[in-house]
Image (cartoon, rainbow, N blue to C red; front, side):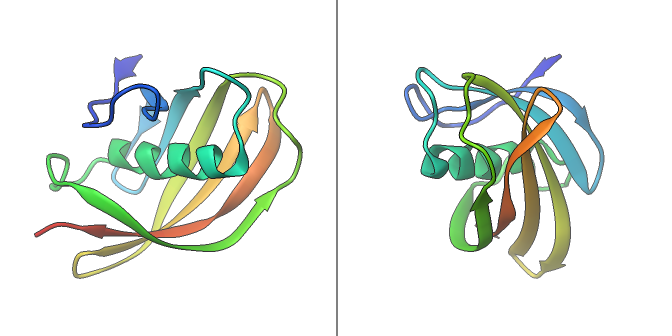
Length: 118
């Protein structure tokens, strides 16, 4: 496992380790100090998007919108996995789709848009 390099500090740094990655998707282990809320799950997905291999790995990204975010099942664990996929890129905007897993069960899903600084 490779540690994910983020500027976030505890207690809001959730994305910890890259489990797998390529140019358009990544799977990341996320960890929480307590059972996460839906907002914490979404933030962990946004942080996980930094694991996708791009030429922008050292640039800052900012969460700008959410779409179709659903909590399917309340989490019962504090260590989860996030899978993110870059669905569309236009200039400095990235539309990402995410699924969050507790073991093999999908507990949350949705999409978000990130603006990457120039």
